[in-house]
Image (cartoon, rainbow, N blue to C red):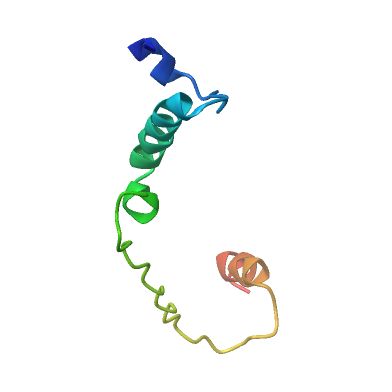
Length: 79
């Protein structure tokens, strides 16, 4: 039987079915830490759906024909 300390390792060689439990435990540990386990959990029949991100609604600015950094310098100088 493997010791608990072996769960801290990210290296598992799958030589036999007995290694699979240790391997999935390591995968689960990292996936849980990154909040993605619900999306890859092999024990779930139905996986959590990924939602399509909303396109950001950016305000529209009138082009002034120059870079913003130049505008800022001109505004600060009062020109």
